[in-house]
Image 1 (cartoon, rainbow, N blue to C red):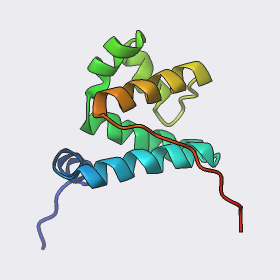
Image 2 (spheres, rainbow, N blue to C red; image 1 turned 120 degrees about the vertical axis):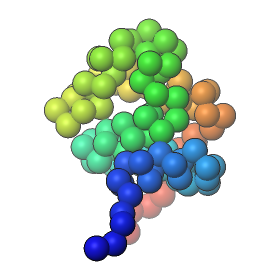
Image 3 (cartoon, one colour; image 1 turned 60 degrees about the horizontal axis):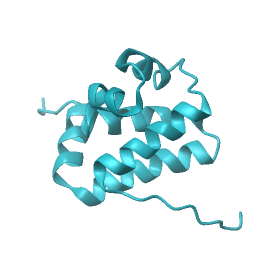
Length: 107
């Protein structure tokens, strides 16, 4: 039997060592949210938060408790727009990333 690593630990390791992968993961989470796929966007964003600043630091930056943030990005969570925007702004600042939105025509 082949040895395998846990998927989440693999993602965490890759985010911490590969800036391009980290940016792609963050972008993918936001793109999923913007396209209406809330479940995927929350799941990817949750993994990104865990792999970068963590929920405790994010709680300090947003003024929302870590427990509330974890619930928001959990499978049954439904973050308010103001909370979601605060989280995205904090993640951009913490990770030195600036997101922009570019319109594209649907095919």
